[in-house]
Length: 143
Image 1 (tube, rainbow, N blue to C red):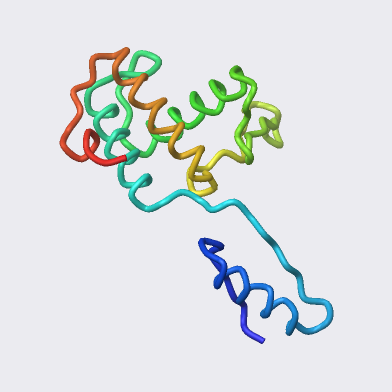
Image 2 (image 1 turned 90 degrees about the horizontal axis):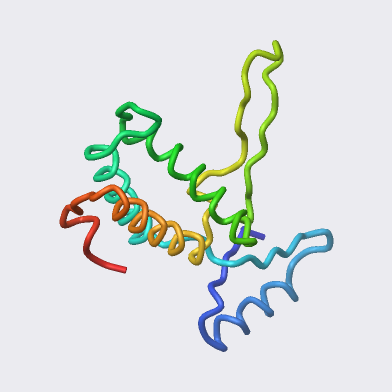
């Protein structure tokens, strides 16, 4: 039996999922999860991160888009913790094997739920507004 995914958006999809589960061999596993972010959300926050990286500094220096993304996700994760709504896949800090560094594990935008991605977009708008970021067309359009 092949792996199958069902998006539960109407009764027929629910029934197909039920039928598939009823036919699954013994020992199969069923997982029902909240949907992950949408592609349009991902495109939006990547555009926002690009604008922020091009127009601001962090900790007194400029950062490329990839590094800025990691820094902003960490800031967002902390803001969510402070608000009492930590991310589903929150980060962990661990010491390096030699004890000379701290390594952050866990927070990645690919694991964002739709709601977390939406909150991240709003966080980036607020972050950029506090720093007078002028949004490009890509980061000012859409959801």
